[in-house]
Image 1 (cartoon, rainbow, N blue to C red):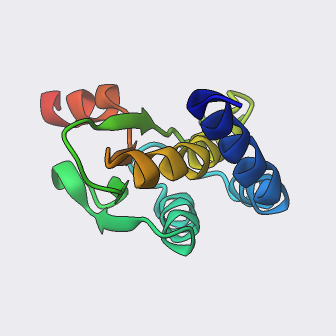
Image 2: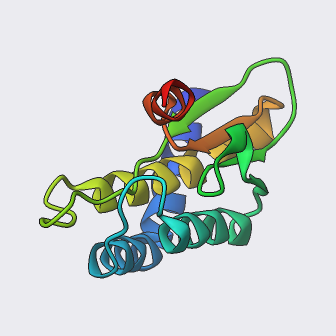
Length: 138
């Protein structure tokens, strides 16, 4: 098996092992919809899950209390995934941001194994850049 194949298998295994936690995270966010810039619980839950998997989490980035950055590993290359977890007024998570948030956490868990073995950091950030742009333009 090549190094790439091994890394992919390790990532798949880590994500599969975290499956129940990721599905639970998605369901918690879905069951507690919070509008944009008010996602205190969803932000806390996502950051907590990443902390539990060895990430260093910085809360309140970009001047937003619901934004965070989570990193694991060190090195010259950074891979970032943006998570969204805000709900829409009156319809909640019909947009699927609960799934997007959980998928981002899962991707972070899987990719962080590669980061820790390749000396390249992995970062999971929330909110996405458009949310920061929206906040700065208002």
